[in-house]
Image (cartoon, rainbow, N blue to C red):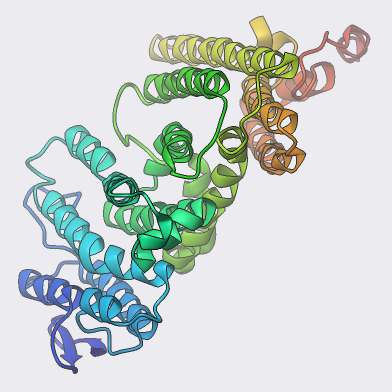
Length: 448
């Protein structure tokens, strides 16, 4: 087991190992120590010559591995050595503990090795291609594990009692398994990769993908029972929503993978300073689990209750489609506004201060309104099936967007060139729900 981690006088990584053998994590640490022979404070993403991985990042990774090794060692009831075998031989170890052991012993070391390889080729490999490869590979641990579980659960006589403890736990707890996979694959793995890349861009992109993955996860689970037509309707709607949002993401980022991280994360990075490396785990990823698992609860309900389609399903369909359409036109109008101002700036001409055309004439944030309609429409599906409690996800998301709206408007008012015009816009235009402008207030302000 890993006892100590330190940095030598020449910035060499020193560690001590005790126990009967080396786990895969210790072999990973040994690889890091062997490969990182030259350390440089310069970021590996800058400079004309290839740079070694900075020692501070190495230390973070070693400490993460140290913590993981200690945690899994406790879960296995041993020293953390040969965890997969240890958990197999210990009948008292729960399925969740086996899942953690499998993920850390098999998946995490492999992906970190792959990530380090990509970092080494950073100066020769196109950054856009590198980010695309990372984006496609990162969800594979959960996908492969789940497919492996399905293969075991449907194999043979399909008797749940005949399954091993790990697969039995996965069989009996679909929601807990979804949360466990999210925690390990998104919260932990995305967080590690984000620090390696010095950017938290991945969670923005996967906001458009994770709901689709969760939808198929719930539909494919052995305990799923549902009306086929309702499932097909929700599947089609979710794909349309995802394609729309993914298209908007890449259009905004000029068709690049991971061109930048969300400005709110950049602000938080400055705010937390040296504490950002650990605070980001909770601020960026752990919070996303609450939001995404919560707002996707209706997808779980749809695939847990077999009830014929009725009139309320059509109401939900209308609300969902309305939200998608409103969000699409709002984001398109915003994109055209930003593009036009960029061209005016290049030509040295005065830019348009505010977007007050189209849907933006009736709402200051019509894109947020459309997004809310989509999630509340999904919640109607769950309510119709007798699970109104699933509204909690849409409610939490609405509360989050209310806070985001406040941050966005504060940011707009900090720009001196458009602050006065935006204050007038605030006084005359609805925040979310599209409504007619208050012409009386606008006339009074103009007279003043």
